[in-house]
Length: 114
Image (cartoon, rainbow, N blue to C red; front, side):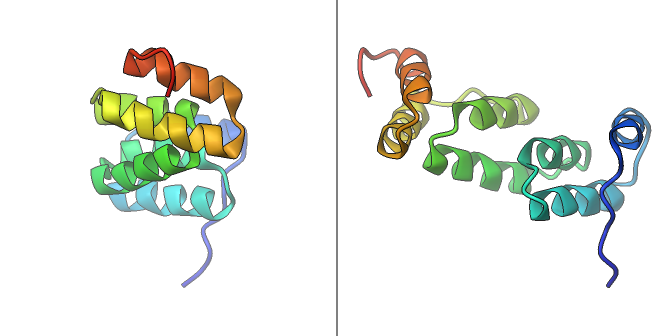
């Protein structure tokens, strides 16, 4: 199978606003993931209505302590992270030295410290 080429930024913008077959959107999402470009992958997984893939990435964001990605994915899934999700994310962020995300997680979890 041929490797999917990542579109340039202008092509990407056009692909995100036009109708796109789910299979093509998923293929592009996988190509972005392979290139380490998670935010673009999230956009195309959302376009493909690939909820399982988005949930997997959300779980990875929690384990990595990445509040930005968790918020982005949660918006695409149209769900609110639970206080427990934020606490887990905060603990992972603290272990990874991501102090800014520790604070974000604590505020979102509604606790003074994570």
